[in-house]
Image 1 (cartoon, rainbow, N blue to C red):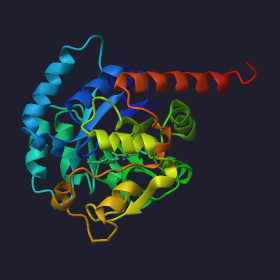
Image 2 (image 1 turned 60 degrees about the horizontal axis):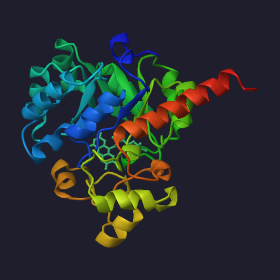
Image 3 (image 1 turned 120 degrees about the vertical axis):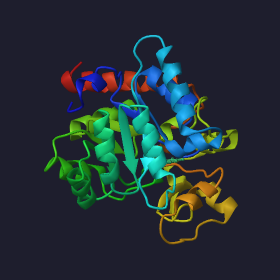
Image 4 (image 1 turned 180 degrees about the vertical axis):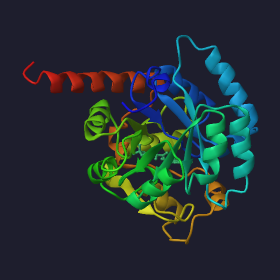
Length: 307
Ligand SMILES: Cc1cc2nc3c(=O)[nH]c(=O)nc-3n(C[C@H](O)[C@H](O)[C@H](O)COP(=O)(O)O)c2cc1C
């Protein structure tokens, strides 16, 4: 593992409950951290009911009261210029002295220095090798590689090619995002060279998520064949459930990313290919416990193939 010891020592599974608009709330993040994976959330989710500062305070207090040592949480900051709250959000993260931040939709450049000044680790999400190099030049400490089949605004590179391509020039923390639905896949990602995996689609249909019942039921019913690519929401290609596209007549490309347009959509049913592993609605701790068992079994089988 190339992750700092103070982070890796608090994980029971090398994974991040991925940041998801309209899905990741305080309950999901706290449950993920308590189950032993990093809990992440896009900072704009806080504006649904309060302010980012209040959210962070509530989350910090909640985790202070947890039994044992919870995993760290990682706010996700949208760097795109159309995010008019970006600088204010960055200042709040700095004021709270957060440990980890995940940047997305744009260069992490303006966030790196202020976050490093308070000791935070900056992971930048990227979808191309060129962006990976640029994010590192801008000072990112690690990379989230968005690959084909990921939920939300997806990548398009094959995960094998992307991880190995980045490992050719970077030996720091890599997070593989896309298609991870069980502990076997999480272990395979580690063999490939990733330090962590994202769990996005796999944790939407949980009791703690902000997703509504119809969305959770649609995830349970769907297979990977029901995932389609569309630029209708936000303007960047995103993986969505076919049933939502059909109901909303939304399969229309609309140009560049616009933060407010993305947030203007309510109740979008996004999912990646990992939806194949979603078979029932469970508490987060049960999902993570199952993945830990699968991960340990896969590791044991590789070490001892005849057993
Ligand atoms: C409903 C939904 C909303 C998402 N919102 C965000 C977001 O706000 N910020 C972000 O960086 N990624 C977002 N993503 C992408 C996820 O963080 C992650 O990259 C993706 O889900 C990983 O692929 P998986 O779904 O196959 O696990 C979203 C994904 C989904 C499914």
